[in-house]
Amino acid sequence: MRMDVWMEGPDAPVGLLARSEDKILSFAYADDIGPEHRISVSDCPGWRRRRTKADG
Image: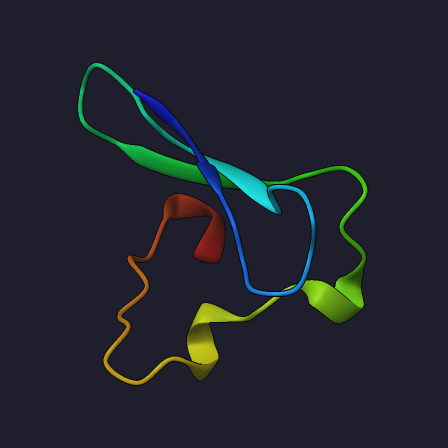
């Protein structure tokens, strides 16, 4: 499953949310979305980021 992600303001999708067959979610910003339009999930109350092997 894939879904365009929209935010208020930009005239085009800001990214793509995808779910793989094993139900893992991933999100990627569109190539033309600059850092000034990106949000950090660490700023969202209640959000818990799952640690990965890359985190150490």
